Image (cartoon, rainbow, N blue to C red; front, side, top):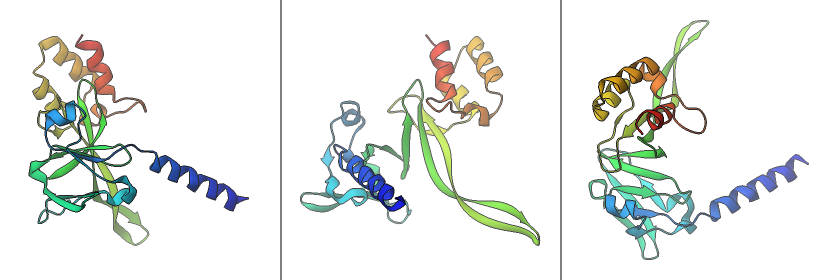
Length: 194
C-alpha cells in the first residue's frame, strides 16, 4: 500500500514538473517586464535546463537549448526563469529568488550557515541551509537586505509613515515576518501608501 502511494505521489510530481511552460533568460529588465524570454531553454532537461554557478571564479549561467549548451556571463543577464516557474534576479553575481511582488519585491537567498549546538561534551558546529530575505523597491532598483533601516532609507517616507513603520516593525526580524500568503511589510505598505 505504501509503495503504491509513493508511486502515485512520484507520478504526480513528475506530471507537475513536466507541465511547466517555459524556462529561459531575461537579458534586460524590459524583457522581464514584458514577459519576453530572450533565450529560451529546453525543459526536457529538467533542473539541468538552466544552471546558475554561484562560485565566484565562474560567474556564469548555463542554459540548454535546442542548439546545445550555452554559457552567459552573469553581468549580462537580468533574470532567469527555471522550469518550475521560479524567477531568479541576478544582482552582483548572485541569484535572488523572487518570492513576492508587491509594494516591495521580496527575494530570498539560500546559503549554508553554521549553527552552534550544545552537546553533552561541549559544543558542535553544524552546517544548515538558511535563507536571507532581500528586497527592491521596483524591478530595476538595487537589491538590499530586508532590514528596517534599509526599508526606511529606500522608501524615503514622510514622518507619519516612518513613525508607523518603526512602531509596527521594531526590529529586522519583524520586518521579514510572513503570514503564509504575504509578507507583513507589503500588507502594511499597501494599507499606508494608498
